[in-house]
Amino acid sequence: MSKYAKDETVLKTLATGKTAAWRQVYDDWRSPFRLYFLKYTKQSPEQVNELFQDAMVVLHRKIVNGGLQAPLQSTLKTYLFGIGKMLYRKQRSASVNWEDDIPEVAIPSEAENRIVMQEQAAWVRQLLDRIGDKCRDILEKIYLQGYSMEAAAEDLGMSGAGAARKRKFDCLKKMRQMIKA
Image (tube, rainbow, N blue to C red; front, side):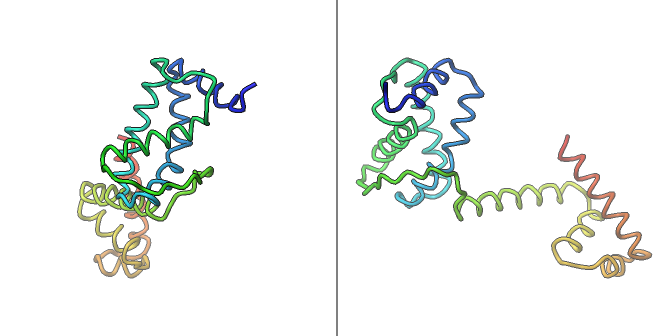
């Protein structure tokens, strides 16, 4: 029996081309791949994302076309990382001292968290630009500038904290509708 029996089972499932299986592999291996290549290549997070995409495409082609079959000589994850290394070397014509320590747990790196936060902030800014001046003003005052309801109401010339709460509620409801649309 092969020492990579679990990976060979995954290989058989992936060879069928099932989208759910590929999505699971993609989700499970994305963060470890990013962590590893951010650490050793000093590439930007966007470049590492592209490298991961390219490596997944190569892996997909290899598996679906029958170029990778049992018995395996390594885990599929290690194979994917090897593809990433080869692609990086081809792109950069550089030698990197790679460690064999491939991250097992998908722990978001500081850079990955920063990217996610930047993307979310840009998305919120787009929503605020589309929502209208009155809503943008109250939401910015309360959530970004830290105003109390009373201070926001006074600054915006509203009758009181209750009116500010009502407008905030209506604006958030409008924003949720925009998100669903």
